[in-house]
Length: 129
Image (cartoon, rainbow, N blue to C red; front, side, top):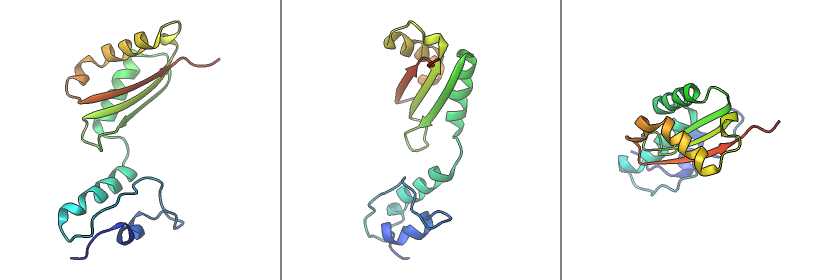
C-alpha cells in the first residue's frame, strides 16, 4: 500500500477546476499504516458532507425556541462526532440583553442537547435594521 501524504492526497482534494480547497491542510506522516490515512479521509468526508444529524437537530431546536431568528448557523467543530459545536444566531429576542443573557437563553434552549456535548461556542447578535 502506498504511503499517504499531502502530495499523494492532492489529486483527491482538488476541485473541479483543479484548485485546492482551503480546508484540510494536514501534514500526515509518511507511513503505510491505515491510521495515518484516517485524518485525511475524515477531512474529505466533512468537506463534501451536508450537515450532520447533530447539526440538524440543534438547528431545529433553535428554530423552535427562537422563531424570530434571522440567521442560525450550527457547525460541528469536533470533526463530526458531535462533541463540540459552534453556534451563530441572530435574533430580535436578544435585543436589549447583555451578551451573557443572550448566551444563557441559548444554553437554556439547548439544555437537553448540551448534556451530551463536550463544549459549545456561542455567538449571538441582534439584526441590524
